[in-house]
Image (cartoon, rainbow, N blue to C red):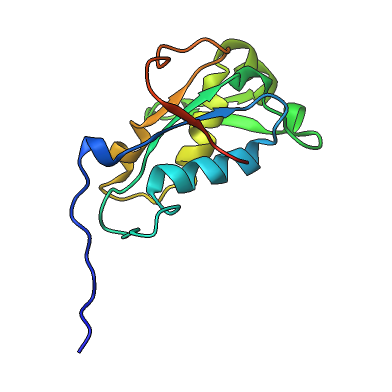
Length: 144
């Protein structure tokens, strides 16, 4: 009789660091690849109830591409939890003020809402330009 393999909870040594250059790449394509890597779906030992993912560093977030007319038509929506305080802003204004927020919210929307989501999102590091403080890590380029 064969037994089901259940992996052990990973340590910090098991996690790898990946880097993604978002310059000129489509938002949806890189967001799905990043979400899968953060979740650990690219590993053979993937288990849905265990946080098996890796770290992902995204650089040049301000230069991510949006297809079609999304730059003017797509809206960033934020609610302050007070009545009548729904805030809407076009993506062009969000890109000018907070360029990292576009990628952060796209990736967060692709991860299931459960207990692991907060831990998974903490491993996503997004930077507007090419400079980042994770130079000393062994960054592996993530193929997209």
